[in-house]
Length: 240
Image (cartoon, rainbow, N blue to C red; front, side, top):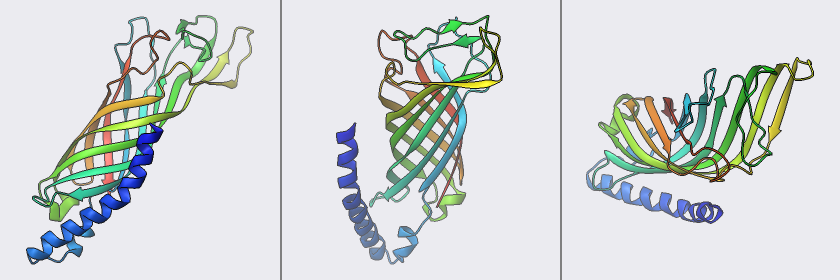
């Protein structure tokens, strides 16, 4: 993963210059002002908020509350010189997920993970939160590239991420000793795969699109817990 990010960091500046040169040349040949394309809005900034779930979770899992995902990305868009309705985009950003449970506790420091049904303690909220540094890649189509922020658009892609944080957060109403009114955090990544590979899809109109993601590789390491595959869907607000 570190090698991949290093390669991207070296190739990206050159790709930007190449794509800009090719795009300017194409549109100058067509008699258009090159600044119209180079300065166009093209979803350079994306903010995503949506629902988060685990596919393949055992029936014994007791989820509760509104599990959610929140992502923010900065993207570079490279129009195809043959047809500027199509483009490729690459970027970087942060992806966060919060999975909520009820009457359940799990100690991330233990192997394997035990999602225990806790009938003694009482939690106002209990969640597993994860964060990733991510590199999203998209193949994009926009119906009217001259009006990017007021046209139909769709994007298919993947994102590669490296985990930077995993923790549980519990708002304890009453613990096993009868004490409550405090927040407990356990931070440990050892039972989770450090790399995430997920497919992505976006579609919508203008600055608003709906998105969906599905993780291809295992979220929890083999033998450390159930083989669940995180997914999410929700709303993307984009622009710039």
